[in-house]
Image 1: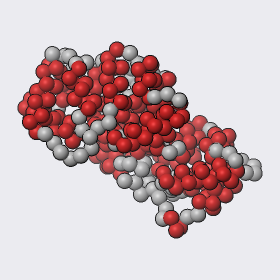
Image 2: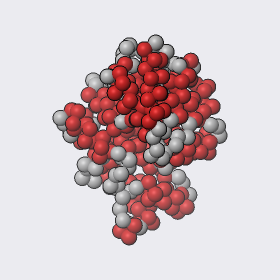
Image 3: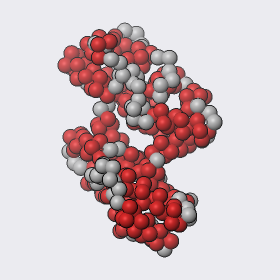
Length: 316
């Protein structure tokens, strides 16, 4: 877990709210003050700040932020300020509305969140958009993409530590048969990935490697331009090694010509309180450069300051 939080006795919610209001007042906005407060408050504290801000000034903090901030900095602060379940609902809705075959955000939400967090995101989706995430995924996607994504977002995985090794061996064989036959959209293949617990899937994929001598994702690299296969590989990576999945998203976001701020913002906002320490270690291991140095080289101004504060490397 992240270290983002301030002990309750050191912080007054009303003081934070007053300071934020001050940051919006007068000539120009005090972005540094906004960063210094919000980047150091955990989800529960930010929720309290938002509720108190609304009751004190009769305006949603998000509306004030929208009015005062702009561009990538505004999006990062907004996503961070949202309750995690609301944030996931918002990102999922955005992903369905702007659906493209290369969009992996739905897989990210469905496969890296705990069963409980995914359920909370689905409840927040109902509250925010007056429909279900399953409805929108089914409506906006087609073919094999719909066949894979719908059960992934609709599942409620078992989260216990029990593993059935006999089942793992049997299902490793099923996966290998389907992949060898290039039946990538097979019902059983999707059933295994969409319903089994994460520890069971890990056991199955270890059996796959032991029995057939290769990681499953290597066998799914048959056609690197096939976007459905790419989504299938992302599904497996998110279920088994989320830190490796997110490291790659960050690497591609930062190292390409022109930064992909959308991906960078999303990963930092959604993982800062979850597993950012592990992601940073993985990034350093894979790239021989610390993540904060890579971000500082590629971003500027308040956006850079907020990103560095959230990954635990800022001065704010």
